[in-house]
Length: 214
Image (tube, rainbow, N blue to C red; front, side, top):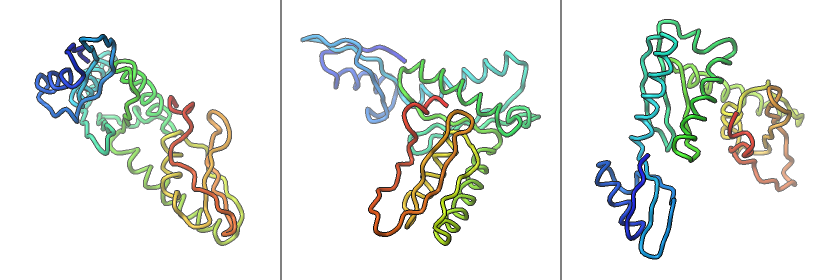
């Protein structure tokens, strides 16, 4: 991330876009100082985020002497980082706990570097992507049971990103709403039946702010 100064914010962003060889729309910024005749801002591009991720992960795995392939894809404003090593099971860990911890560390490093919340997902040989599909299927199957029985159902505890999959998958289902309950490792999604006479807005797929660091 680089600090730029100009007479206006538009000038600052234009200067940064030219230097980074990108469109102004691809830039993110934080104004650090504003005077009557000048503006200073920290500016970064999507490529800056990708470069940081490559360098950070490269140094991390070099430090533990692990040869690994890193591929980064930008998707809907998020950065999907797919890792592949000789022993992917070690990176994933039991019940995905090692991968979850790696996600927490990398997200913290990225957010600290750019002083902004950036959506980053670390995956290992598409493990998370496949798991998201399975969770969505389980959520749909459970929701159908709730629709038929009118009895609420609690899903197994799962991390923040996987709960978001459930919320998003069922966000517009008829007679269904989802809520996260419990604390810490026991936090889980409850799929609830909502009668037609109750006009309840479906819960947002976004988790509460305090869970952002999970």
